[in-house]
Image (cartoon, rainbow, N blue to C red; front, side, top):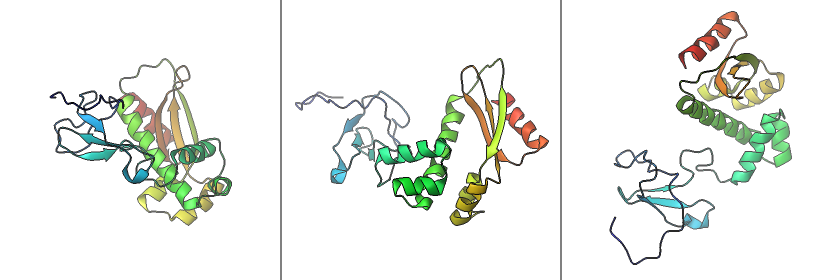
Length: 196
């Protein structure tokens, strides 16, 4: 890139990439093609500009925080509360958030974690594996087979099962799947571990 008389960039953009499909730099980290472009409308998130395609995007693009009006810290605290086993309605009361919003954040977090696992957990070699299962109804909400109100009620009773396969040494969660509590489902989880 040609030198300019502007002051040097002080914002590290090396961990971001241009998300625009038509951009030649799409998906490439550390190419010095991005520059910080302030905070649009005085918002908390920085806007970045790609010097290759001249497109703009927020630094939260591709994360659970993208497009949210709520503070990032609030979303993280709500998800941490859910991870500790507190119910959706109780979490909503504690943080003064609508239960439907909490459910949406939970579904989006599950999608983010699934995408992360699919891209980073490849060709993993483990010596032992632990299988476990727990209840959930998140997938039914995502597909529209279950209304949000019904999902919140059912989550309190926990009717569906989430199957997990975990390496006890590294603590990596290698597979997560939703289904019934049957031998066929257990075999499906094991098959996914072998394929991964």
